[in-house]
Length: 337
Length: 267
Image 1 (tube, each protein chain N blue to C red):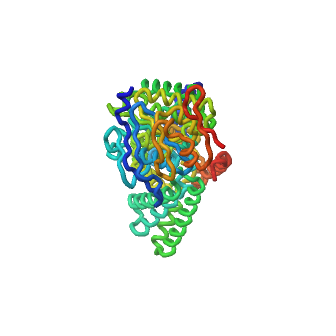
Image 2 (image 1 turned 60 degrees about the vertical axis):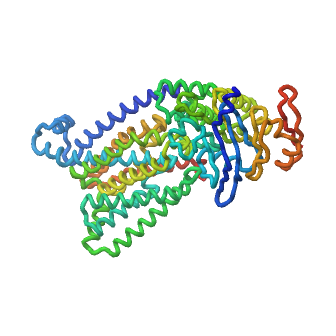
Image 3 (image 1 turned 135 degrees about the horizontal axis):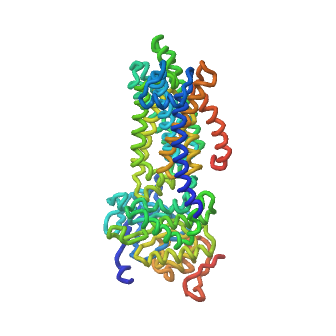
């Protein structure tokens, strides 16, 4: 009884804390950089006011697009992680661990090689690559009795290895102009932020959040098991294909604009679940808030810690995420057979 | 009551089921009336679960017809069926930390009856299964028996009210509901199932313990190697020779000193 009442309270508190955290990290991310701006100036510039010198331009043309890009990529990855974990009925699923990110990277490379480096083309390629990867892993790892963690992670290794060799092959056969484009793109993190990229990811995030209406209840029921969900009237096949497409879209777009960023999709939903429980009606939107804050903070750290040089943000998230993953493995050891 | 029993909730005619190229049920004939409790008994691997899964629409029968209230079950939409038929499968693994009440609440998904009524129904179903005190506990931290009773409360909540079934019959399918329970909770579960059946629900279950099945079922169906060997009231189905033959072991069947129901003694 206490726990149930407790959970409602904690939902409220977690929502408030996460919303505040996101707003604060947004202001901090915009304020910090090679030119540090006072918080009051940041708020004034965001509201459309003028600042002395280039302050207004720095905020609106450089730092805001980057902050929006980081926040929306983080939110998209966290939502994709929550969806994948629900679909696999397993808290260890993550886009980068099960090969979706690698699949999307191959798709993006192929798109650059055959279609040029246009953002739209690269995104489509990454989407297609991600789609093949999730579908493949899901088909192999999930049977009647649920998902085998071992098979799921091994499939992740297999898909990632295959993706690496395909990427290598493309590098080998590419002419020098394409090779340069591909390697530039692969190095790219959030530092290529533009308004257009931020808009693309925000639109993707909107699609993911709007899709919640048709997925979250079904996902809750799906946690009971596939046949149990079917007995409760859930159209399981439709829900799954829905989720596979959404995850491929989210991961594909985020890979296309920011390269591969690992572990956000693993860490964030887990933390949220510890606070509010596994109900996807709360888990998915709160994961979006948490993922946005996490990647914003990680990116701010990556930009400022050894300024003027930037660390790739993926390094920072892996630094947080990899130990967390090991911790989860130890905790869930009895579940992994 | 007797007029209710004449109305068939479930009618299985000539149903054969193949799994991986092997025929596990041969031309099964079975029916369950409203308010009636029917148990399928038989040795391990006899095809009890296969038959139940075919009725639950998890397996496609190779031949035959399964009718729910006179309508072919394959033609009923998933959501509509979920309002009429609740299924408890043998394995229910759930690794996510839902509370007991949250697990039971998932049963109200197919209905649009409103949160307040849903909560009341879930509480009533949990009381019926003696798991009201588990409402706030986390599912993965419960014992196997507690999880089992909570899952049963969930399937009861799914078809709790006759008016939610859209004027159709309600059917409860249970696969080994009592197996992991202690003797006290086995009987408490069976009494709860009987009381639930009395509200007009047809119940079909597989049961391991023949004595338990005999004391709470209106009829028994005895299955061996996918064939229905005998069907009828417990007293007529359970004879020393038939049971000894089906289970391939010597048994003695005596009437219970108080209730008169058949009791199976092994060895």
